[in-house]
Figure 1 (cartoon, rainbow, N blue to C red):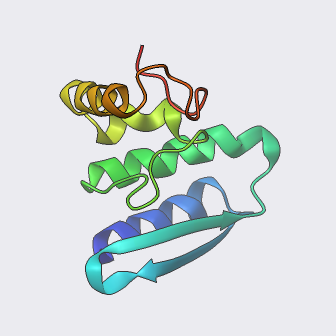
Figure 2 (spheres, helix red, strand yellow):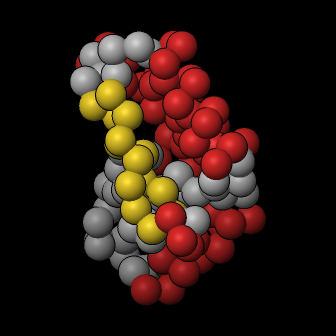
Length: 109
C-alpha cells in the first residue's frame, strides 16, 4: 500500500499538479479509495487511465466492493481476464436471461 500511495502521489504531483488527491477507505484490509479533485474535464479520461494502470501494476482492483459500473467499463480488462469476464457473463445470463436488468451497465458481447 505504501509503495502504491508513494507512486500515486508522485504521479499526480509530476503530471497533474493542479489536481488535489484524497485517499481514504479501509486501509487495514487493503481497500483504498482514490479521490482526485479539480480534474479538468478534458483530462478526466487521461487521469483515470493513468491511475487505473498504476492500480493494476500493483495488483489492485479498480472497483472492489461495488462492481465495475458504467464509468469504469473501459478499464475492466485491467483487472479481469477474459475468463473472468466470461464467467461474469454466464452468471448474468443465469439470473437475467432476457437481459432486462440494467441492460446498458455492462455488456459482455
